[in-house]
Length: 75
Image (cartoon, rainbow, N blue to C red; front, side, top):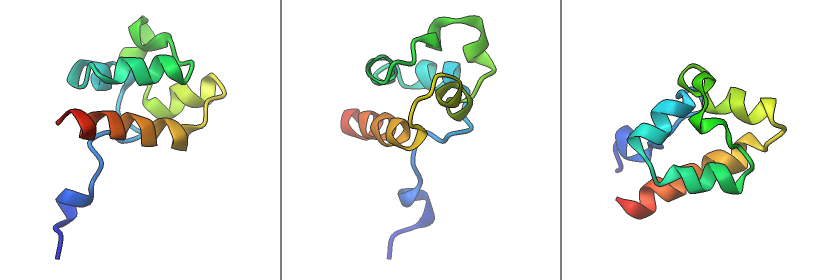
């Protein structure tokens, strides 16, 4: 039986965008591909992934899937 920790995704919707990019630089390409270019602005330190996606009309679930896939693929 798998532990709960192994089922958890490395990135959650409530993580600040700046933290995601700092911890996982490979996600920059994913943010760009989805049209979320604000990872480099000052607000990215405070705005979480879900807030940023919603503010830009981006599908949060699709973004989360691709962000976590990028992290898993490179680890």
